[in-house]
Length: 159
Image (cartoon, rainbow, N blue to C red; front, side, top):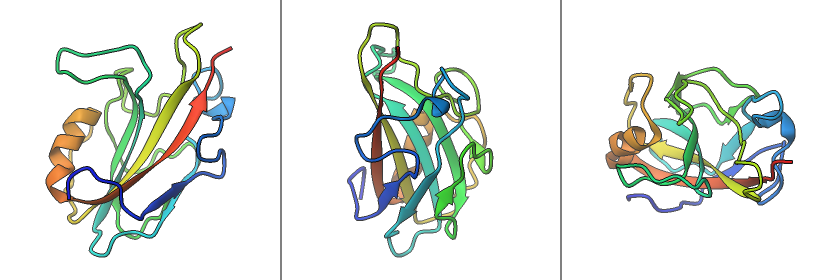
């Protein structure tokens, strides 16, 4: 399937599609992950991964990636359909902050409003991946097993 949107739907009780992410879920607040829930999961799903990426961050790496990775959590069992606020369950990858925890929105001062893409990815296998993968490493490892994905986009403007 590759990286194409599916009918799966990702939502949050904290903000709507295209809406402002509340401060408590940012680097200026409590810096905890927002609650997320998904439905309409593809048949054959065996596990999930969730990531958060800021494509508006003015960063390009030597690997050709762009933006800023805020969160990667994976090895989520197929029967799970939500992550609670401040979720510390499951396996965490390494954010571009260099930590294996959620790091909330915090765009540079004066950089304007940024968009934050929260993605849920459905996989056709349980991969039991090791902790500490970057978002790019995670995507490379799961791509052959990806059967569905979709996103929730929130925004944040730093005061």
